[in-house]
Length: 145
Image 1 (cartoon, helix red, strand yellow):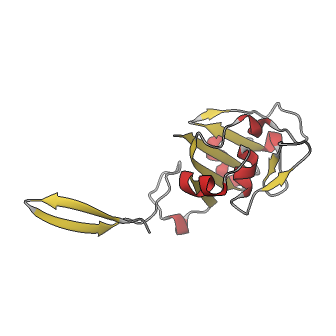
Image 2 (tube, helix red, strand yellow):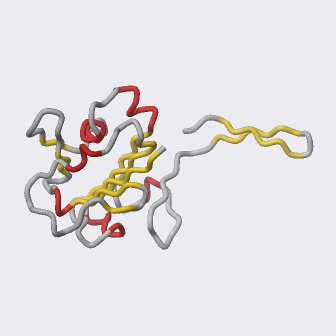
Image 3 (cartoon, one colour):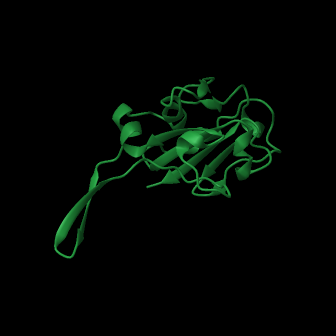
């Protein structure tokens, strides 16, 4: 639950509690709990509280994305056993990878500065194909501050 929001109307102040909501590409309006896709959300405040070195470390904070570490400071996210060409990385709606990437682990997510990322949503499984047909494992959607 988010904090109260005060609304002034006709010199009377009303308070309303706002529920958390997630926007996703769907034809119907649904609650987060009724979505057919599992979604993990990482806010700017939560990620900065842990002070991650890289965006890969920030994704590891969700507790549901496995980060394969193969070099110092590097990290390749893996979702449900899929990596690189079976996942989609998107920053402000612009895809960072495509299906022509090699099949192994790729450290391109470390090119993101974790302190410029305002909101991160991780969509798990093939329900993330609304971001592209090669999102078999899932999609990582980053929004900058």
